[in-house]
Image 1 (tube, helix red, strand yellow):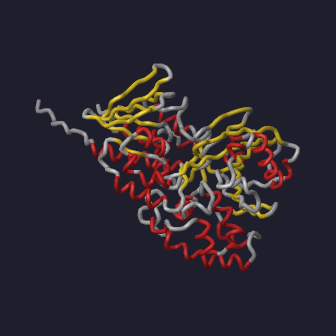
Image 2 (spheres, rainbow, N blue to C red; image 1 turned 30 degrees about the vertical axis):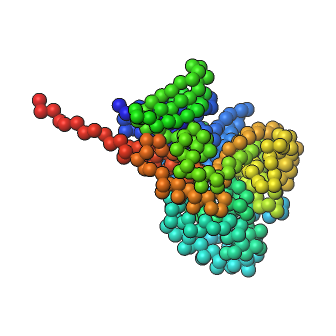
Image 3 (cartoon, rainbow, N blue to C red; image 1 turned 180 degrees about the vertical axis):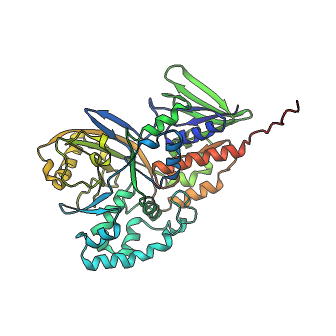
Length: 447
């Protein structure tokens, strides 16, 4: 039986491990944390169920949905409310994603002349969006020459950007639109077109189910991955047994990119350009509970800078699925993403809570005097920030990295960061390893 070692038990690593397990490989997963799932984390408290990392999937997540089906979680899929909202001043302008044309024509977010300009200029997006695969961006890297903000200003104009598109792009990308490559915006426009869904019981159900089939060793950070004459050798530290090592035919490193470079020496040269353009972006995920339910019920609230410099997106989790909050209550997630001029690592939990409450209770005044509690999760690493030039460097790395190498790399930094891009990267890594290590056919017995 062939052996494979996976470094990291996020969705990328578990997807690779699960697909190789299906092909008869013995898979060992080494994880530095005391749990599986990476940035996918669901926690329960006082009747509330918190998805404190990624909070949504869509039915366009093809590889993700295949895994959901294969591990027997299809009956856990539930549709989220289709309404989203864009903030303008203290008002919420709600759009129904199931009726986009009607919502666009009737919304008061834009005056009639601005709607016409948006529709006319939006036609210019047909060419870059047509046939775009958000997880295979090799034919779109020629757009990687300007930021989202510069592109939107050029195509639609500053007025439309300020009125609607700033809120949309801040919800779509993981860093400031004035720094992020427009390729991320184009990819996000495609992925956002699907029906919003979630898993009853929390999004961590999927990584937990995948891990059940694998030999997962928690609290075992890897220190080095090395190629040897006898295969791949992986050195790690176990909290229970101390220093250890494992040898296998192949390995998938499914960690943040900088961590992968630190543990695998050959990456330092081949990935030098990509590394120079990679920036780790963190965020704070703050869940606030209220003893009253909101009167308006959009699932996603997109927040332009004019409404809040600090908060890019609100998610009304009590709208997402019935099991996220007790009846008559509200659970709202506020995302504070890394910005060039603000370092949220220095902000106290009280300051973050006060900032979130000011915005939430301005938009939902019925919640005032009904605040219950706040739950803060700090993510030192939330995504790889794709600044202008990142995708060109990424494509060069993917072109140069040997497809038959015994060590393959996987992570959601290989596309627009999402749960689907993590799964896609893991599945691709598994396919490359299978292709490089074909099964040996056995001759039928002649008796």
